[in-house]
Length: 232
Ligand SMILES: NC(=O)c1ccc[n+]([C@@H]2O[C@H](COP(=O)([O-])OP(=O)(O)OC[C@H]3O[C@@H](n4cnc5c(N)ncnc54)[C@H](OP(=O)(O)O)[C@@H]3O)[C@@H](O)[C@H]2O)c1
Image (tube, helix red, strand yellow):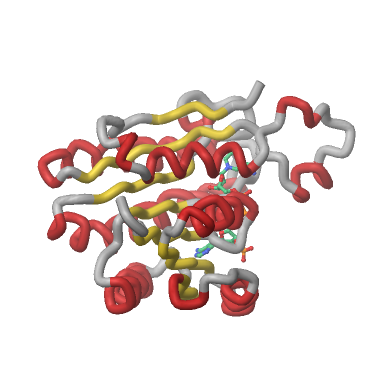
């Protein structure tokens, strides 16, 4: 794929930025999406390849805004080859009455966002009979531990969404896969777990390389998968 057009959501976050740094030197044309305008502007300004990078401020919980972002990507580059959706987050809490708010918040942050940006980019990919969709789930989406009801259920939704997209779009030659990272080595995790053994954590760059593979033609046979990237 020459100069693939890749729409990266959460591009200003830990993993999103690593994906940008992995794909930009390889000649990809990037649509960098995040919800904060300053984050997007700073990210785009930090990249050398001006004309090949488009920054778009979007709240992914809003379907109309996602459609608008896909249209902007299309207007600029004429197509979208891949969606790399890194938007998501983590919170723990027991199943109790106040926890209903956390349930709603994580369903919004992890599940609704993945659905809306997928729905926004799919028509363009279906028209071209080509596309790659990569979401980020997590292992509690397969089996939750205690205090992981909302997180596990919202990431399970991402896995099921990925499978459904893969099944529906096989005829359109669009692949859809999700990655289940272990603990990612981020400043936030280091601050939250100062005594943890970080040796088994996964560097964002390692997941970014896996994503680059899934975006590439080499991964054309991989679809509907939930790929564990748990580190050592
Ligand atoms: N970190 C880990 O250890 C870990 C482990 C397993 C799975 N994961 C998953 O990996 C993915 C990336 O994690 P990360 O550590 O890179 O997260 P991150 O640093 O928090 O990055 C997420 C980015 O998405 C943005 N965002 C949040 N909600 C949005 C919305 N509605 N619309 C548009 N942008 C939005 C955030 O903006 P704000 O900064 O404004 O919120 C942030 O820039 C997530 O899906 C996470 O659940 C992470």
